[in-house]
Length: 114
Length: 129
Image 1: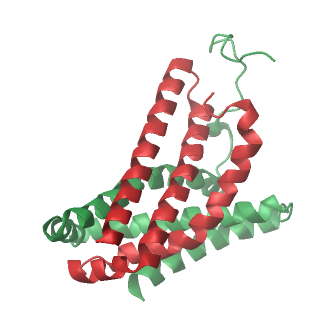
Image 2: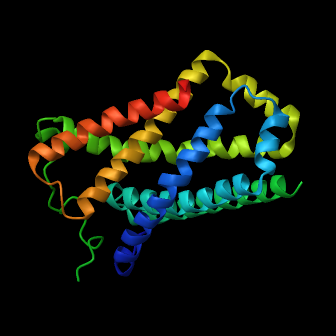
């Protein structure tokens, strides 16, 4: 099992805490992303050089990553009966989530400081 | 505790399959919550690609920006936004249920309708306001 039996309540609570974070920060980030289509590079950089903006995106990404890690593991637990396949996909899920979290944090910190 | 993996998959009792139930609106909305979650999971790669393009520089950013400006891609991004808000309002619905309220059939029906309506309105606001 990707979500171990002892972690059920823990994941239940964290899924909701990250959901609240995503609810507020996610709307901001998604709006920023969509409104940036067609905007010149300099103007996007200008927005991102504001400490609050890149920090919001970084925090949102970490919260989002944890949320989607739990969610995907639940789906695997529900639909993949084969133990080996489930463990493999579970590990793949962890790797993907860690890569997305690290890459976003790195991008945001680098853009924020330069 | 019995380990479910010790029984061969063929011997395990099966719960009623999805196709046994008559499809209902609330059921569709519930399924959509999970499907939208999966789509958002893969959609996060798109956001990451966008961040990285900003990190790399103006030329890469412009390339992605031009790609996003194609009508068909724009439609896809519009649907992606709708999927995001669908999951968001679906989540709020779950928060209401977490308090132990809103389980009456009529309320459930209305919560599902409101999810559909609000997700569409929010998407339109983000895109056209």
